[in-house]
Length: 209
Image (cartoon, rainbow, N blue to C red; front, side, top):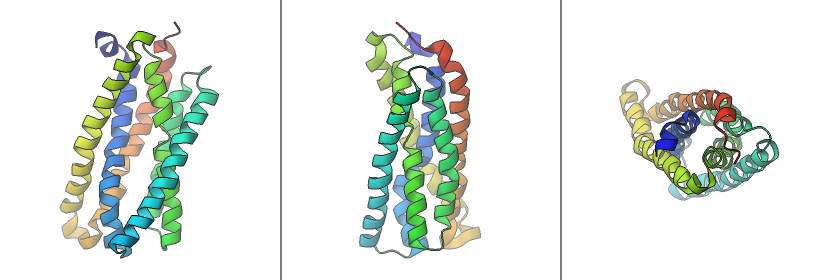
């Protein structure tokens, strides 16, 4: 704990992930309701539509992010933070296009791409967390990172999007959830900014033992 507390990149990686997870977990919870309200999908249609987005986008993003990290990261530690930074920057406009898409086909494509980019951080960031401490501390470092990420992401994500939707209901009516998600994309931009800062620090904190 003392070692992690004194390692700036650990906190940057943790809060970068937590910021992205606020929206990520919020989307997992609220997108089915959004598809029902704004795209007029029935429950079974939502399950197939959103389930396929999670399956395709989630699998592709997790694998591609890890693969790119392995190709670029070992000789350049900063890459482990630059990958999620760039991916979140691109994911935000993809989701924005998706929520205002004129058709389900375009919406599916943009949400799948956004989901892929939004999950590309998993492999590189967890690998980076394990490389800023000695080998005998890596499991605890990963557990501490996941604790912070899940505590903030799960604890705040679902509430924040729902709160914003309720707050904007007077102005947007049934479409308030659409605008809540749009404004919530700011968490992806915040995450990208934190990861850009982390990329400048990782080289100094990298453990090469």
